[in-house]
Image (tube, rainbow, N blue to C red; front, side, top):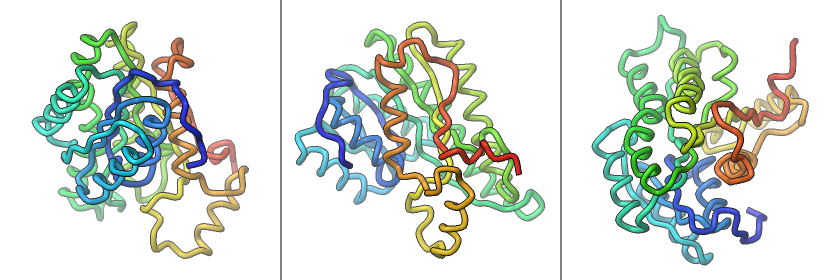
Length: 254
């Protein structure tokens, strides 16, 4: 990441889920670069610890907690570990997801349940356990990772579309429930070149990029910058809404 060290989040403490790779990794790194102490959360212990090690080597504050964010007891432990380390909590980035894609007639019920558990239920669990800590810290900001799938349907993405649509709806409701002390917003990524794209043919990637007005696939850092903005005081009058970062994908009508 090309950004230099700043102080937009100096003194703040953040939890970032799904932080071992992709958008979560980029966000954890950027928030730390901007002065936040970061609790990086993932089920991939080796990759998560490596991200934290690199943040620390670069002069940042970070710790890793392994957790399945679809399980309430584990999310509660994440918050407890964060408070034990730094005594406060200011920012929650609900970013983790899991998905299996198929039409409803072909989608395994267990895959449906797991997709909604990790991608949607985790947002509820994150707020349930983080909000009390945020209020004790004087307030804060929650940024949920939705998707262009929150706004439009895509063939075969039955469970993922349902989960991401729910993330956006929950974002609005949480903003009403927890304001004015806690702001809640969503960032809606488009086609972002994360490890989920590993193994996809170059021709397919080029075709998708060609459909986007920006004429490229997004990078995880594109989303991390949006999260940073929504989590910072620069967005102090922004809550209950979403920021689409899709290179213009949804601007197309044909």
